[in-house]
Figure 1 (cartoon, rainbow, N blue to C red):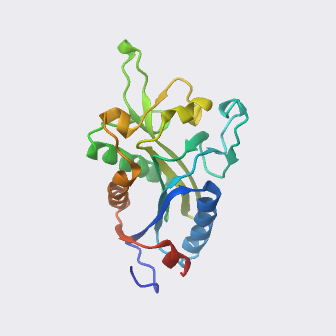
Figure 2 (figure 1 turned 30 degrees about the vertical axis):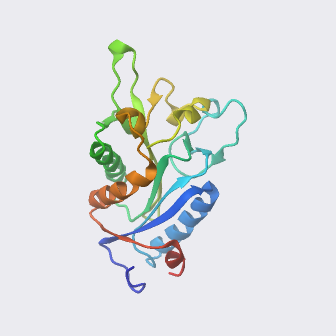
Length: 230
């Protein structure tokens, strides 16, 4: 752990929050860290975790994209539409200083592309769609498949929310919604694309490393208890 005093502009504190984390709990912690980061009392910080199952809706979500069976959805202040988080999916919330929002989103997407490549999966961007995708094959009736989603908010020059990468989660959770507002695409996971089980715990250290590289930061581990003392 690094010293509490001072803020190192070149570092990224990595806080692993564990598994089955309730969405509201992580969102509350994000807001607290965001306030500290915006006030210059904390440096750039990454919260990384697996959520308990939850559907969330960003500011652009339409009514028809929500679960038709009335399953609860948490409305949040990020961009984007309706998505799902839960076990087997790696979720990363970088709370970092941001200058160019478009460039920042590209860096998050590039992080996921690099992580996918590390596990032998080719992922790419698709024009007009956020996130990263495994390419489909129209001749086989195989649609593009979303591997990772991005949804952020930047206020006072500091980001909140972030990206979610499908590792070993059950894609059927997405059947109740129109994921990210895109009705004609599929959802896949690193496990499905490789034919072997790749759990979020295995992906986590690679994602931390790739994100730090994309942001030009030096990562270091920080326990949640030590974060809250700052």
